[in-house]
Every structure is written in C-alpha cells, then in structure tokens.
Image (cartoon, rainbow, N blue to C red; front, side, top):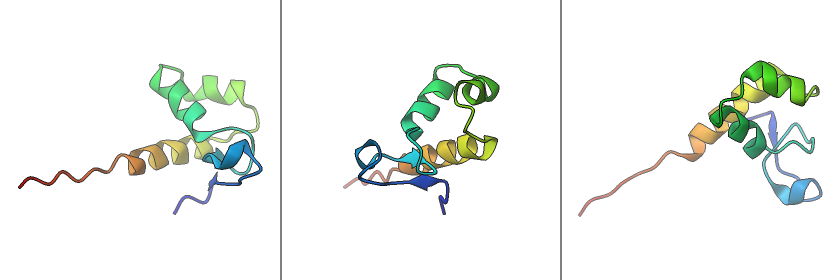
Length: 71
C-alpha cells in the first residue's frame, strides 16, 4: 500500500522514512503543513521524487483515520 514508506531500525530508529533514506515522512509532511511548496521540498531534498511527497501525505492521512464511538 505504501511502497515508498520504509521502517528500518538502523535508519532513524525505525521511524517512517522515504525509501530507506534518512528523510523522515514527518519532515516532509511538516514542511508541507507549514506552507512549503512541493517544489521547495524537492529543492531541499534533491533525492526525493514527487511520488515520495504524495505518498507521505497519503500515509499521514491514513494515520489519522479515527473511529469515535459513543455509548
């Protein structure tokens, strides 16, 4: 489902990263959330691809699925 998101204990302590690189998903999502454009993120991280940003946002959205139960 998220083939660009990797979790490796030897890379960033197992945090969600992009394709095994030392670029955490949280950094990418955080930059977008604080107003950076995709082009600015790509400029700051030349190893990233547009698909990496897209999947980072999809992964973040997936993590927020909440289920509220009322009595």
